[in-house]
Amino acid sequence: MDTSRFDEDALKTILHECKQCGTCCKDYRKIVLHPDEVDFIKKMGGYVGANVSMSDIREKGLAAATEEATREGKVFMIHPDDKGCVFLEHRNDKYYCRIYHYRPRTCQGFRCNLADNSFLELFGGDSAIHLLGQDS
Image 1 (cartoon, rainbow, N blue to C red):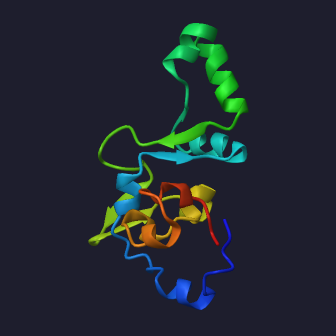
Image 2: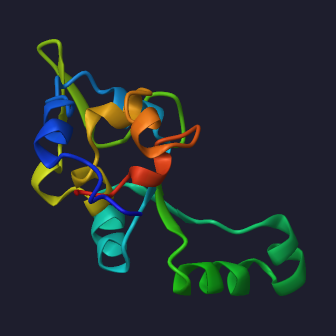
């Protein structure tokens, strides 16, 4: 993607500061994990899963398909219900991440604009999900 056509200062003015509303942590149910983040998330009590298709399971078996998906980096922190991330904490009408300083890089790169449609006109497409984890 050619970002040279964007005015960096103008781009920064449309990024919203976090209002601690918790929308991102409630709405995004599958967060990409880097290999070095998986063990920490599991140790802290997060749910981790690999993206495995039913056809891969039938063809290779569950263990082999999961191992292959893990090797390929198709590993996610998963929010199993509509309550949001297991690390999301509600206090004093605001939401906080219990592992904020150690949260996955995908979460670190999240900008509030990704939860709405304000970036879609700039970057095209019908979803801003491809921008998750990007910090520039």
